Image 1: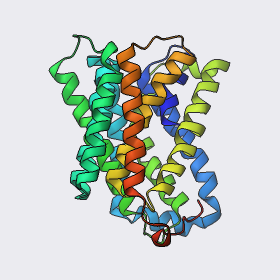
Image 2 (image 1 turned 90 degrees about the vertical axis):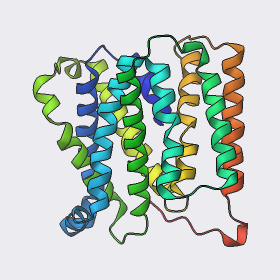
Image 3 (image 1 turned 45 degrees about the vertical axis):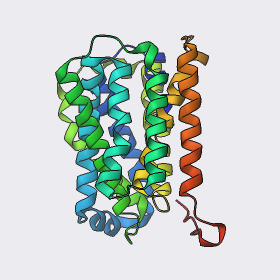
Image 4 (image 1 turned 135 degrees about the vertical axis):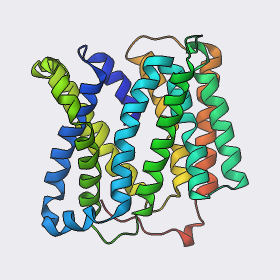
Length: 278
């Protein structure tokens, strides 16, 4: 679902990226509040008292801003490579989940990702763009680590998620006051905003947070490298883009690395924990 964001954005109307992010978060929060409403005000109050919820919310807001600046200053390919590619490493270090199997699978995935995006890497990188990309990576790693620490909390997951994205939306809300929002009044713009909010945010993060209940944060971050792989395939199938043979080889390497990560991260059948419902 995360990998469809770029394609959905390009299929939609031209609009300031900051305003798209702010509208996306605002709509997502509205939906998350409705989903979490059955748990009552007490659940929201309990979630708001958890420090990790605030950390995750601020990290999500920071990721939106820094990632946008990274791809603007260094290009989509290089910005994505640094921001998404460095996230598993930083997450593994933050969570202190560094094993030989994890290092092997993560290194293999990063090599495949570099090959996948090799055809799009130009000379337009800037020092500031790379710094923003590293900031995006650190923000996303912080979000994953904080969200993972909440997995054992007794507070209802929908309430936690609603408060997390509520914090992120409030942080970026000033952008709504200074951005052009006419695009969202058109059918194409509204459809894009709804898709980004409902599918690529509400559904995607419910699934992601559900997975964090039984998957280590470092492993989750490496599995999230499927995002640029999905984006590249959609670029070919939907947008008519072209991938070089090296890029296709890189895509295959990423896929093998992700399968390896799933293999080495799965406990024996008798040790597996039951997966709670969302």
